[in-house]
Image 1 (cartoon, helix red, strand yellow):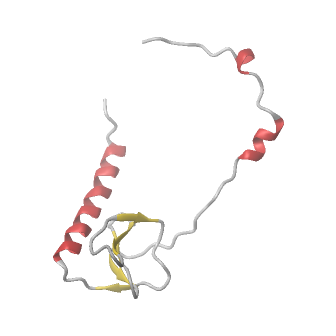
Image 2 (cartoon, rainbow, N blue to C red):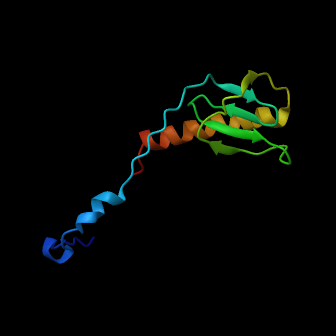
Image 3 (cartoon, helix red, strand yellow):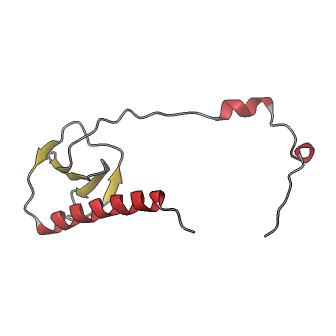
Length: 107
């Protein structure tokens, strides 16, 4: 393994305007109960870890796309479509795998 030491004099100071280049955006996201949600044209799934996924949209009978939050016009709903139920299981598994990977770092 090679260890390198950075010389601060070579790096130099950042320009004074560099501090103005950073913008912090905070999203206030409401927690939703796990399950399927529908509005007039789309179906969403909220996983056990709170992640929101689009699972059905016009022209896409089956999709799994991560979203920031549910649209305001969605209502909790029951789904009997086997493909959507499998997508819900997959979304829950994906969330558990990510949590496990963070909790148990590789050697």
